[in-house]
Length: 436
Image (cartoon, rainbow, N blue to C red; front, side, top):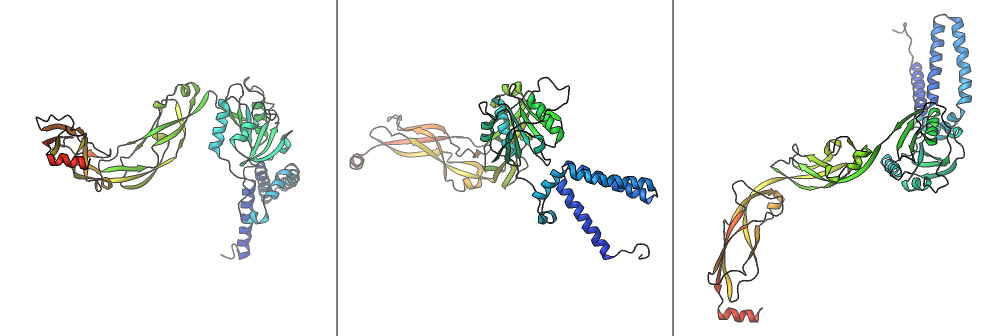
């Protein structure tokens, strides 16, 4: 095959090096406008190659000249983006490591802070910088370089703050700039309720890849702007409800010994009128344990585990997962011990106590029954026994404690307790006086 395509090891190395460099450049410029321009250059080069291979001399010259001019234009127009990539990426990281990535922000925390400000009708504009450079589009920016926190956001956009009307520029988990003014959009036909904040957010998003969160001071609404489009949370509201977890369909042969949580906090969103009318008892959380077996388990919660009225949706569940320990249930015959309270009438002693039946058969967790010697009855008072009758017969219920215990079918929860008295002897009276 050498006569068809003489392929040497240098050719393989050449292909590998070029492929690797193209891959690294793609990672560096991914998500930026510069990547689109690079793809345009690649298209010009392909057109030039095809024209040259087809013998189209003038067409080949045209694409060759156009490519040369395009390279110069790109270097001039995108000099800032190229400089940022070079500054943020060392040679070692370019060839061996990952492209520069700023710290990530806690999105659930941002969400809580935004909706908290919206509930108080605090106007705000948060600009989340992506890959595109923003400096040439901003004015009157004040550097901050502080770590993100809801408290800082609340103080920046408080109505008495001098930075209230500007935007906050956030990159990763850092607040870079505050009190920043953005370019207004020239787009016409926007809804009348969109004020300066919304128009500034749309204007910047038309020029860059930012994501802007806008909170309306007048209506308390939250909107998200990206690539010139606005996604409004109009008439939406957010609420947190804490509810107990219902552990359902536990197999008869198993017992839930312990769980890491018995209550969860559910964050719910929906139309404002539905959220306002929501009552805590309308929210339910459950786990279906019909397919579970013995041992330790970790079950992740999602919207399917939450019962809500129609029109509402689950945003988040805290904790997101519950750990369970399931134990095998066994059957045992446990003795019944009467729970005697009070003292017999004066001059009398308890001679004998008889319980019928003397035991009951129950089922329960193996760890519980292995350490259980008896079950007590409900309290039985002996102070009201009539001395002339000398005994008391009472039907009393057996207390199943802990609650995981269950009577087996056919077992009666009540037992008959017979208490017999006898008169004290003189010697017994004297012993009571010596040893009260």
